[in-house]
Length: 173
Image 1 (cartoon, rainbow, N blue to C red):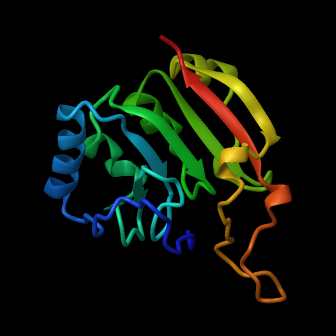
Image 2 (cartoon, one colour; image 1 turned 180 degrees about the vertical axis):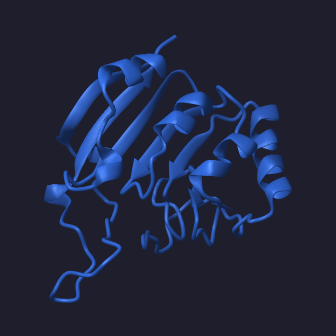
């Protein structure tokens, strides 16, 4: 993803592409009883204040792909996951690291295949219940910018906010 100009109060951590450093960052937050908010697919830098940015191209936060989430984040350690413009399937891993009662916010346009929910049996197995599906963009994300991976014919990358929908999932207790 291409999101990423600077955001005030951005966690000032250079991209932690070293697995040990990423694990230590998470362990320090857990031992300090800090709430962990994860901006999954956050781009170069997170647009979510106070969140840990996690993206394959992260310049600030943790550089990694979805397959490494379980190596870095212990089960039931993350309070909230924001997946804006997801670029891979992630719900299986996200459900494991999400705390009971925690929420996953998926912000994407309807054409994004990685934002589509699995069937009811899969959601039940993951202990996720749907709070909102394809609703209006949550107001707290209205200041974010969303970008396409491939430009339109006119060369633009921006995705209009009016086309972004929010799905909210909550992990059952």
